[in-house]
Image 1 (cartoon, rainbow, N blue to C red):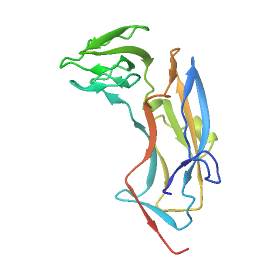
Image 2 (cartoon, rainbow, N blue to C red):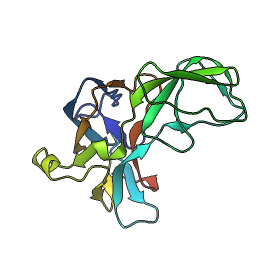
Image 3 (cartoon, one colour):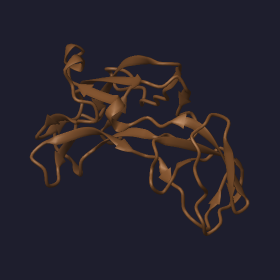
Image 4 (tube, one colour):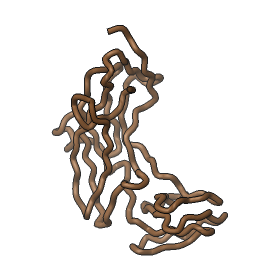
Length: 191
């Protein structure tokens, strides 16, 4: 098993965090980064440090593409809102005029989309290696985990996600944001 995020310090349960908000608020959680294989070593490929950071996972609208029911996208030129496919089909060659009012919907080709509300922004996610550090952490910035990590040890990563919108928001279908490391390489050693 490679280095990844876990829900527990003993690294037995892989993290499968799905965020849901019912109105504005802040959600704090702690995850554990590491490998439960003590013979694994993680190093950065080109950078000086291993960095864990928020990343953009949402897909942008594309012309002449098949979208399935419930796929979540944003416009090719993001406007801060996300849209759910409510009638699966192939988009046309022209991007629809995107709307931002709740309940608004429109079509492109045979695919139909409904506005879900404001998208999570990478700046809505703060990371820190301590709970107290979340108060001064910069939204969207990564945390440095070290120049080399040995398996068998978990690093606590504290995460704060803020929802500034009154829209109901979740990433239960297509995640909009995630966490990822910079380019790394895993090797094994004799322990």
